[in-house]
Length: 349
Image (cartoon, rainbow, N blue to C red; front, side, top):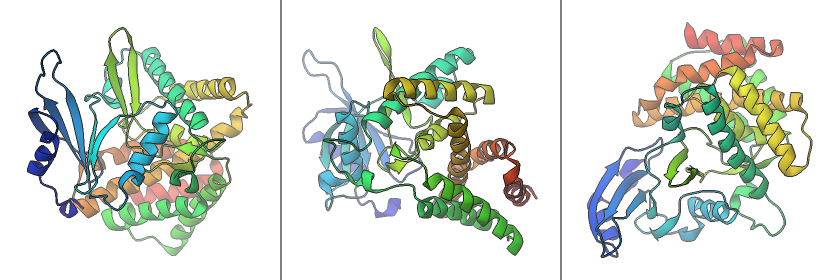
């Protein structure tokens, strides 16, 4: 919780001033976590222009230091030439990290300005290219460091934990719903089958929260925009469809189903070209769909928990979009009609 962070805004300023002359320091709007962010502008030095940095403030991590998951994963991704923000300095005792300033343009904000479906698709294709690069070059292999993320995976226990977390935080706490024994069994059985199936899939390195708010778009002179991944500290092993489902069936930005199908085709073609391995397109989409259901349901639980535990109502407005993602997918599969009926009965009544 924020109260556990003992460092004040003044101490953040003092830490940055140790080695840099500050023009200004401004607290930025936060994300869904308890981390705080500041933009630091340094004074102009002789021929140099003003420079801008981001300070990320979190709980002290003196006991972890360079083994902090954010730092470990950042180094691993950077070494594999995945575009991530550079780290310039750290103060583990105060829980401070000085980062490259990527500006304020998220993928979500960039998508609000697209002129047509072709422009939208081109942007997503570039993001998919970076995702495939991550899956191929960051996953375990020869001469790869044995980082903690490689030892974590989306097994059945983890996937069902997220499902039960959503049932508790959204239905039971936020909506104050009480399930009948029969309906709770239908819910548990349906998600149990889905999670067991997903846990049996081949795994790759997953970002774990790969959506339109966690890709920054950075304009460059005489070059295409950079697409930079952020918020990657919770990475673990999971199906290739995990991050793809987060991206294409996003709670924050709704793609047309026809566009999703084109982008799935693009992913399959690019994956096969990069790896030389064939993908069963029908089976791939089936895994993608079930992963979308689990991933979106997990997101609903997170949105409700932010409100239940921290009073943060910001993300409640995205629950409708997220439920629509689940509804559209489950309508494709009659075998899960019972699960769909229970989910929406207790949501709407």
